Image 1 (cartoon, one colour):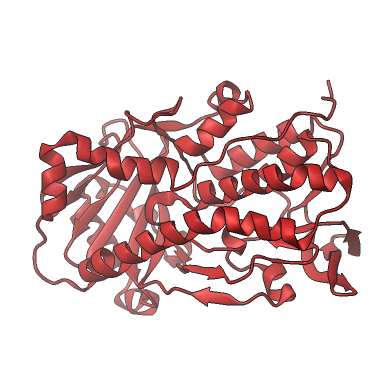
Image 2 (cartoon, one colour):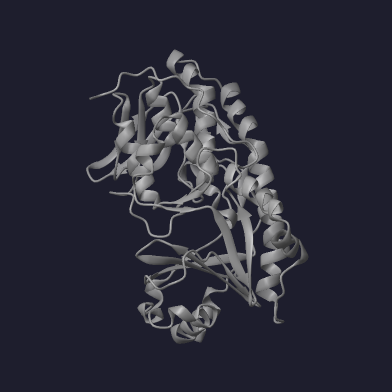
Amino acid sequence: MMLGFLLARSGVDVTVLEKHADFLRDFRGDTIHPSTLELMHELGLLEELLKRPHQAVSELGGQIGGESVKMADFTHLPTRCKFIALMPQWDFLNFLVEKGRCYPGFQVRMQTEVIDLIEQDGWIRGVRAKTPGGTIEIRAPLTVGADGRRSVVRECAGLQVTDLGAPMDVLWMRLDRKPTDPGQTLGHVEAGKIFIMLNREEYWQCAFIIPKGGMDDIRGRGIEQFREVITSLEPCLLDRVGELRDWNDISLLTVKVDRLREWHRPGLLCIGDAAHAMSPIGGVGINLAVQDGVAAANILAAKLEAGNVSDHDLQAVQRRREFPTHATQRLQVLIQNNVIRRVLASTRPLTVPWPLKLAQRLAFLRRIPARVIGMGFRPEHVNTPEKSPVRH
């Protein structure tokens, strides 16, 4: 959506396809990081975006065993917004659609599900898509696959995937929030258990980390025992954990960490999770996808306008974004294997590791994870001009 918006803003005709009738999906990532907020500032849209309902989180913390710790401090970042904005992803997407429709070349087609690619003479020339009115063809000089970790586009293109593995899955759920609840609790870690709560004002968006493939075992113990585990970690939820009536109130996210060897073929480019599925660690997936979109627009807008996008240009997008992708995934895999795997397998009471103890004493150390999470390894900037006339 960000790529489509930027290209339309630069005078390129764009059609964005969405297979659903709306963007309302529970438990999509909803952390908009300072790097993305900085891009919105560069586009002159930040003030309007922040009028939408959101929560500003300037510090990340949690509880390890019985001890509270502060992990990341965003207040010193060299950005206009020194916080993470927690905003439902559907609100962010609807905002981009609204702004994109100000440009005549921007079109969004809902209930249009890509089912195949159109290939001629070794080039991808567009897609076949299923709509309520039947199957249609949409042809284009460039097709961009941004359809997530289960990407149909990358599968149809036959692009090779390198699986980096993940030792965990995530159970997502929501529970009512009361005014008397704690403010912003972002993590509770005990031996064998990791529970995360995100403040969404009217409710808590909660994540329970489980070992990879462990859902059947948890189901086998019953919903009542699962409720007891949650209240043992967060006693304040005792009076509402019954809102989890059965397993239908809990969504399983199968965690994947993978990446394509080549993000492109002639006439085709993959970005976001379609090119590199990210772990939920750090909530960076949305922001890396947005950064991919900005980089792609910077490199391709003028080429598309001139009608001469080459495979070399698509390769340039991958080269630009490969380092931050690899660096982020390397860090995520390191944390997965050396922290999360060990916590989930642990049976002894946990203590705060010495690096975190040091960060409690030396506040400036908390700026390091804030920089990595909030800005990433290569933050992009909008370099595309606004050429298209704006609709009024």
